Amino acid sequence: MISGFSKLSTKEKIDVIIKQSGLPADSLAKLLSHHHRDLQETYNQFSENTISNFFVPYNIAPNFLIDGKEYFVPMAIEESSVVAAASKSAGFWHKQGGFKTKIIDTLKVGQLFFSTEEPYQFLSSNMNKIQSVLKTATHELTLNMEKRGGGLRNIELQAIEKVPNTYCFHVTFDTKDSMGANFINSCLEAMGESLVQYFTENDKTAQVVMAILSNYTPECIVECKVSCTIKELSYWSGDLKPQEFAEKFKQAVDIAKFNSSRAVTHNKGIMNGIDAVVIATGNDFRAIEANVHAYAAKDGKYTSLTDIDIKNDIFTYTINIPLTIGTVGGLTKSHPLATLSMEILQNPNASELMSIMASAGLANNFAAIASLITTGIQRGHMKMHLSNILLTLNASEEEKVKAIAYFSEQTVSYNAVITYLNKIRQ
Ligand code: MEV
Image 1 (cartoon, rainbow, N blue to C red):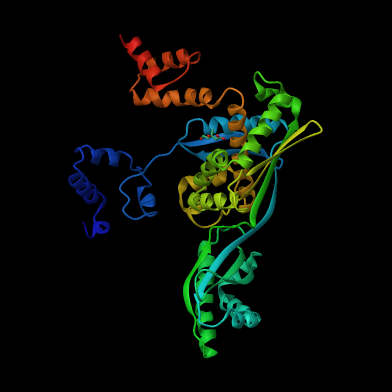
Image 2: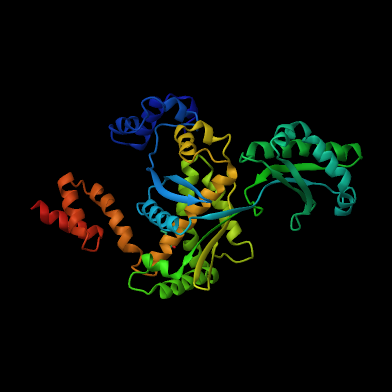
């Protein structure tokens, strides 16, 4: 047990860790070598007890055409094949007219949980008055948001059935270009105080249990679509005829619709693209992940987030996904690379960024399914993984060049690369 750890300097923290964990003495140098020369103070401010930085590759997927606008999409991700897949997919769909998106809605949610001995009837019959009290409580807080066209949208009473005497005000907000977490939480806390006061004034009691935004936003949805003629799919279909490819693709998507184990992996392939953009733009990927997977299970069974339609020789592939993100405030404005990502994306508003993220997700998922139903995923995956293996095995530049040439015709595996390196090293 150590107390006062956060008060130590970075160097003192590292010394303590080295001593207590029995790390080699060069661990200090290793950690310091990952410090940023000029910006470490900035990075230190994001968290408590920062001792170094953990680098993740910052990549660009070019050729995204989204609603008629061209984008270079920044993707922060370490998985070797994701950016290659996104780029290949984006390039193909660019030639087919690009990604077409529609913002279905952008409502965010907050929950004020409270308990009272009063019956539900008391609450429901006084709902108009209570709503007005709650709205008034947020008046000051919502002024600025209202000027931007946002604000509080609706307050609904819900009983938490399995928890005695417990209720929730389910509050919806429009937070425009901000993710809105602080705004929503401040409004809810102000509402909580007024609610307790309202009860007291009526000689009754209520206690706030908690007031917090919900990361589940089934009314903050973007739809993204691509379509092409079946003939165009020859670019992906390999040994299959384009029509066979389209049908097999539909079969794969239908499997993900009806088999939850497959749906999780299918959706993971979508999140490969989305999370990478979420991280590169300084948004909260934990919130996005929690939301997306809850949404995928909204009808009681976990299912695919994409839909396919093949009609009159036209292949149409669509995703509908909740993406609660912000383009003002938060890390977007304070993390130097997140700010740069926003500039690379031509400073989109929140709706545009939702569209970009959904397009990246659809692009990655499309490329993954296309590989799975033709060559299998490993060929492309392991080719990309080869450079990681060569790095782990300390291959020299010359060995890397030779290995890449050799494995362009061979199946890559960790053992095969060791065997090959041993052979050329003899
Ligand atoms: C790997 O990161 C993603 C895939 O598993 C997605 C999928 O199976 O659809 C290839």
